[in-house]
Length: 114
Length: 118
Image (cartoon, rainbow over all chains, first blue to last red; front, top):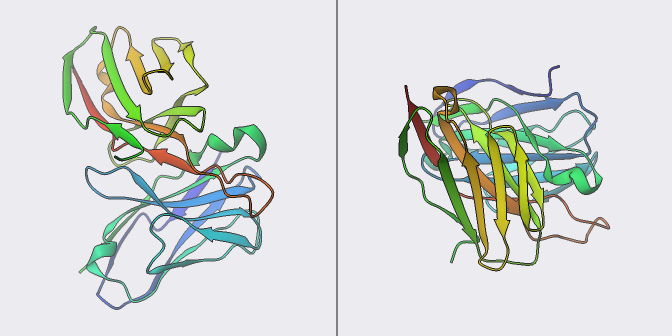
């Protein structure tokens, strides 16, 4: 049972570099989400998607981009990485309907921007 | 006022103690409340899920919602060292109607770090 899979687990970037955080789920969930978690803080929503081809901004979208070409995949793109993007990134998914609030999380990607 | 407030702790208790974790929220418009458990360097996992007010029990865990006081609680009975983790409360957030329904946006508290000592 793979669930939500995120790659890579760790990454160090230099300021100004770009990278894509990968997320895939095998539960056929419509909804997918990207969060960031900073030390001592809760999870902040970056972007979300309600299905293939449909994405929207969350609370902290600046500096990030997403795409959703398939139900399974929801990559997060960082352009021109900045130290403020040092964080742990979590991808999550949830089914449609009343269960949409039950979100399943991946193991996270720890990103450092130096 | 933040929409979900949670005391970050840390909270340290002896094995076997009853643990009480609490959150308050400010927006009464929505009615789904969740507790997630997050072990160190892992992703959050759903622990309990309640709708509206009242209690829900699952083994040693009880989730309680008091809508009159806007209080969310998680009780852990007979706490074990394996319960040592950060506990995040969450509630459903503001909905958008762009796609004919809500997007399942959750608002999280900052998490309470619990340590159960053997």
